[in-house]
Image (cartoon, rainbow, N blue to C red; front, side, top):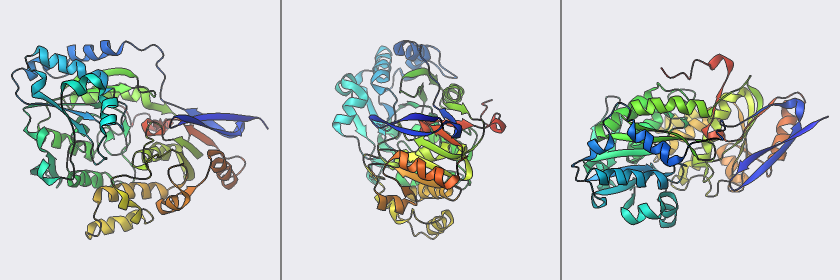
Amino acid sequence: MEQVTVSLPCGCSEVDVTLPKKNLLGVYSPREFPHKEDVQKILRRSLEHPIASRPLRELVAGKEKVVIVADDNTRLTPTHLILPILLNEMNAAGVPDSKISVVIALGTHRFMTEEEILQKFGEEVVRRVPIYNHPFKDPKELVDLGTTANGTRIQVNKRVYEADFKIGVGSIVPHHIPGFAGGSKIVQPGVCGEQTTADTHLLSVRAKRSYLGILENPVRVELDIIARKVGLHTILNTVLDKNGEVVDAFYGDVQEAFRVGVKRCIEVYSVPIPREADIVVAGSHPCDIEFWQAHKTLYPADLAVKEGGIIIVITPCYEGVAMTHQDILEITYKTSDEIRTLVTNGKVKDEVAAALAIAWAQVKERESVFIVSDGIDRKTAGLLGFSWFPTAQEALDAALKLKGPDASVTVLTHAPDMLPVLPNDQTRYVVP
């Protein structure tokens, strides 16, 4: 029987799996762009052609307190390339570096270290302007802006709110909570308090399946409302390839520039698949730091696998399950309805963690999840409700044994940033 070997990225190395060629439905990755333009040219062009907005120099002129809200090291956005251009544009508008600061949109992630900040933002930016981690747990550093009509309590970073000009910098990729990352997501959860993030995350799991790749959804509406309330003026969002290199960039109105960028994002990250497979082997790259990031592997795999099938997650998880949500393991073995009841009855302290635990449970209630990870041991995997295997090959062999000799296998090499599209879903992901 003819065999085929498939390689998946796993942290700084690769993992190989071998299987009968007749079982392999396909190996899928984000689209390649071998002949990309110069990054500086792409970024400058985006600023020269604002979308539904005045040019940055006009918007920022005369401002006294400018904040750039930029994503953290869980994202590949090349802020070390973007921010010098933004700083120079602001300087040209008469705003000196002394009036500009950067706030890292951590959401509820751990603080970045000085070394990580230097690597992410670059020596020039670190030298020119102060860069602050977002203190999402400190109520003294947050401003309460009341609630939305939907009941979301808005608590936002004081430094960001008090600035008289705010620009968000991040990337657009498919995302299971608001459909796509980018746009107003830099504010929520980026620079909001835990309660705000809990409310929007819990909103996302009212649906039985994730909003991955769906532009119009209740969470995106809520994020846009919060960003307007906070006063985010404009964004610069990139679309990257699977290696983190810039394919395109979009500057302008928070909602309109984002929507144009989503069209480009879909071109890069959507992958047509012929049908659902019995088994999906999914690599977590580039979301490798901890399972709090690597869990994004589950939702594209969920779209690509049959109900009752098996998802095999391959991930290093260097920092374990969740550095800032370590109590999550107390509830991850429960069903989605059980966790919802705990939240409703006020029995869960960390509602952000509860929301993700519900999302994970919803996937596990449709499919079995195998995990291969040096950062998560067998006991921890059991608490997560996953079956642990020491190697990817052993996990795949076990899955094939369970599903039979004719089981179909799909491989998603960079699953967290992918959008598998079935033939009957072609119109679901069209941006008007």
